[in-house]
Length: 236
Image (cartoon, rainbow, N blue to C red):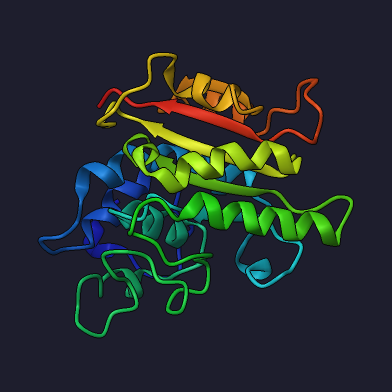
C-alpha cells in the first residue's frame, strides 16, 4: 500500500507494517531494535493476546509489558494495524507535542501497559502484575513481558527470573528477543538460564509466525504454576 494513501479507516495487515513504520520520521528511531521485535509483536497482538480496542481497560484483559522499550515504532505500527491507535497519531512521531515518544509512555497511549526504555524494569513489573492478578482470580489473565537479550545483563532481571517460579506464576510468559547482543553471554544459553530457576522454556525462530504462535500459546503438560519463557532467535 502506498504510504501517502494511508488513513485511519482501513484495516491493515502484517504486510502493511513496513509502510506504517515509514510514516514515522526522525533521528532517534532505533530501527534495528524495532525491526527485531516486529514479528513477535504482530503474532502476540494478532493471535495470542486477549485484548483489543474494546477491552483496553477490561480488568480481565491480557497484558503485554514492553520492557524492551527502545525503538517502539514496531509497537506503534502494530497498534495502528489493530485499530488501537490511528494513522494520524503515527504521523506525529517525534514531534514536540506528540503522544508517541522515543520510548512508550503509558500515560499518553491508552494501549501501553508500562512506560519503558530504561532497561531492566519490565520483568519485575510483569511479575508484580501477574502475582496480583493471580490473587484476584483462579483463572487470571495472562501477562507477557517482552525483553531483549542484552537486557538480561541487568541485575534486576536476574533477581526477577529467580523469583517468578517461586511465586508459582503460571500466568506469566517472558518473551526474549535473542539477537546475540548480550555483553556477558550465557554458556548454557538463554533458555537454560531460565530453566535452572524453574521456568518452562521454548526456543523458536523469531521470524516464523507459526512457530511463534505455537510457542506463545503452548500449553503442553507443564503445571500452570510454572512461568514460561519463549526465546526468539533473530538472525537479521
